[in-house]
Image (cartoon, rainbow, N blue to C red):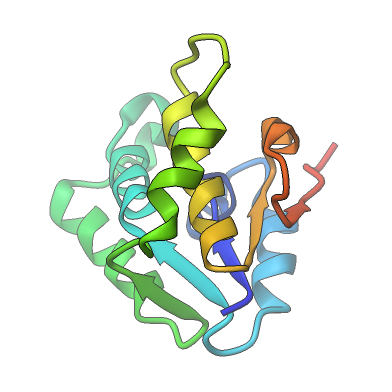
Length: 145
């Protein structure tokens, strides 16, 4: 496994109308089997996004359709499902949130960054906020402009 994928990368792979679809798919297409780690927080984010009418518009999915879409991407040979974090994850997560200002995205972003760090993989995202996490191997994708 080479990467932990952020929802803001894998969601545009699924959602063809998303503004970041092309750069996300370009990254995805370059991945080999077992390259991409998919964890529960990202799976839940995908379910939430796919069933959100404000985000999906007329393409909003019913819960069972969203579940099927996530199962389809999760079963792709490029994916490795991560059901548990390694023991070292908790302390790294705690370190990543320490001394920061309150922020609604802090907890999940720090959790994902700690997972990537603990598994010695790259974190792949469009979110420049991940640059603030020390010792994180990061692949920052460039949005379509």
